[in-house]
Length: 360
Image 1 (cartoon, helix red, strand yellow):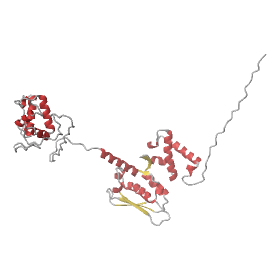
Image 2 (cartoon, helix red, strand yellow):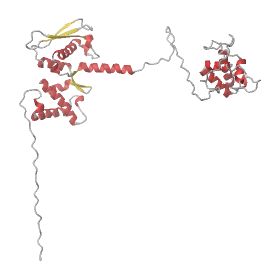
Image 3 (tube, helix red, strand yellow):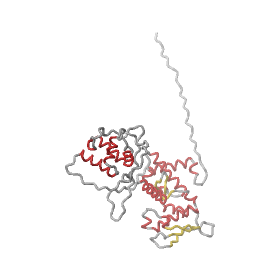
Image 4 (cartoon, helix red, strand yellow):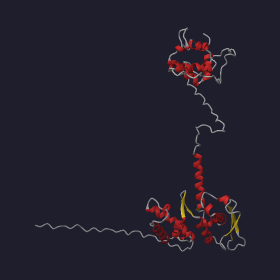
């Protein structure tokens, strides 16, 4: 007996229709109508995308991705709609400054003449000597319905920057700068605070000044040129030794020295070493002899006699020399090195210490 094949019941797939996209149409002639009108907004974005595909657009409009480039171009399209101008003609006249889109002064001057509601175009009256900082321009513009024009004056000295146009063609540069200043004072709603090339020049100059402030002045280490005074050299303050640490003379230098009776005038403490003529060392002098000569020279410059020096070396607190009949030249090279270094690092303190150990 054959078992009939059972066919599974057919399944019905429910297809949910996609929600219809709302198309918003705004019947408005204001400059912001395209932002609220879906069709106009998408059409403006298609214009921005077409601009973004061009290889000749300015470098500052090119972003890291295609979407960023299109968005940058949309900023140009947006401003062009506000000014009722061709966005493809505006794009080459833009630049980037501190994250903002800037516009050339000649473009802004054209916008003012066409969109500021003037009865006639701006008038420019020049005065002063051309080529000097006193060369100036007075910009005059009369609005429709007003009898008197409004004016703004600016001279080269007030506005010039490192821009070469101030040298090559200062008259034309004054026209652009004067127009921008006139609009910012009398028609700010037209340019809406857009950044211009004058702002870019000012930012560059300020950055240059800030960089110069960070550069340290070079230190001249060569000989002083003839006719100039020798530079004053400030001796560095000797470093104070740490407490509870033995010094090279086996006593902490920060310990208060023992008060002693004043010595006769023949042995004053020399704060500043007198000029003592030093004989040239012999050609066959050994390192030990040179070290001893340097040690004795320090004593002579500090007005310390050989007898006082021996008393210091034999003092019970020092014990640099042990036998009473010892001589200075019997000091070992190691001891001479330690004593000479300590004396050179703090001559005044070491001299006081020698004088304070004169009693046995």
